[in-house]
Image 1 (tube, protein in one colour):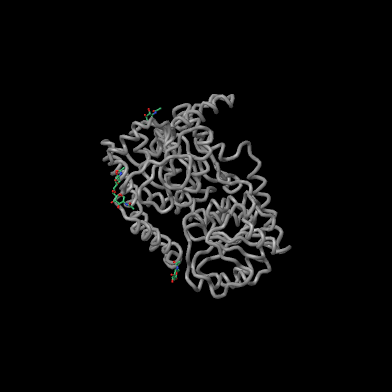
Image 2 (image 1 turned 120 degrees about the vertical axis):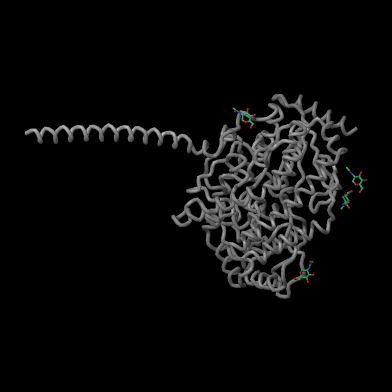
Length: 530
Ligand SMILES: *[C@@H]1O[C@H](CO)[C@@H](O)[C@H](O)[C@H]1NC(C)=O
Ligand SMILES: *[C@@H]1O[C@H](CO)[C@@H](O)[C@H](O)[C@H]1NC(C)=O
Ligand SMILES: *[C@@H]1O[C@H](CO)[C@@H](O)[C@H](O)[C@H]1NC(C)=O
Ligand SMILES: *[C@@H]1O[C@H](CO)[C@@H](O)[C@H](O)[C@H]1NC(C)=O
């Protein structure tokens, strides 16, 4: 029945559009948290266009929900891990990034990151085992006749499944630390002189000392990545039965959909199979629930402030919550705060707590004056879409980096979660709300965001369909993938040319020397005769 209705939808679509639309079979890699939120709109658009979409789903997951009503189907696999182990692990990362990280020096941070990412990879390999070593699931996938694998590469091993099924890969990602995956595996060029390493917190305008730090950042993160990926290299080689590496396999991907755009990203050189599709999930605002709309309207001319620290931060220490709540009480605006922890004692009457808020609809509301955010890419893009200035309280991952971008565009101020006092937050909010430059800059980014040939969601879908139609996009893949590092930087050419110059100089020197000797000798012998 399901197959029939899918076929029917597909046939109708073929007749209703003039381009030749071939309905395909799309396999989607498992992921978590905001990464999953970001995939969903693309999957929905793909099913709208008549494709059949199947999402790989581990039986242990914190965010993906198989019971949720969707038009795509799930393919379950088992992993030998308990839900408690997974959530303990998440809590450990959150605690480290929220409270511990700032207290460490560079070396300690480096060591601790090594340890944490190493543990993360071990956990990822448990998922790989669950999927790749299950004969029944792999058999089903082989029989599924998929056309493409759509992947957020935050969880590895998708390349092994694509290789086994002999299908192309389309990646979607925000970033990897210092763009290690994009640069080392995707061959995306990034001159350290003006492309700040992702998560270095530099902008594209760097002083001499910042350029030194940026350069060292690239080198140190590359060393970290390459040594950590050794684990994956061994797993990949073992599975395929031939020596290979994680990076080499990633390099075979056909298209990389990067989830930012030039309203956010500093201009940089691109390779043709990298497409910037930031704002995939952004939509016009829908009306608010009735009681929320009444609360928002009750704010009068002062308007409202929307406050969310994202889906991961549900709780914070009492002390931090009180500092924040008393700051919110000192502004004339009404505040809608997404917070499911204990109610802070200092909570003022202008602030309401919610377990969940329709964030996009609130940001699109004409009464919204500012957005207090943890700086996740999804939230930032909703704010850009609706032109709302931001107060960033970044927590972990790419969030500090994201807020640096928005600050450098003049659309945000940044607070430090651990050290900020009530007065800091009040000052930040007042600046963003009362100084018109923040709103103007947010509106400028919004205009850039909206002024593009197609909606980013449609562009993402276009490239997935392109890869299905052409069984890959190898014509967009640069030859850099086939070069060694010294060939890539033309070091062998330099060496060769230097050798020639040296040889010429040497011959020249020899000729000159013998000439000088002969001339002098002759002139000396002449003068002796005289
Ligand atoms: C997953 O494990 C359950 C029992 O825990 C079993 O019934 C099911 O068949 C397994 N699924 C797969 C795909 O192996
Ligand atoms: C997932 O499946 C594995 C293997 O069947 C089982 O050991 C584990 O308890 C399951 N986890 C959950 C949360 O169902
Ligand atoms: C939030 O954290 C506090 C301690 O900081 C704890 O007492 C409380 O139970 C936590 N609440 C939730 C909902 O996790
Ligand atoms: C590039 O390398 C790949 C495998 O690494 C190989 O299949 C391909 O033929 C090479 N292409 C060229 C043009 O040498």
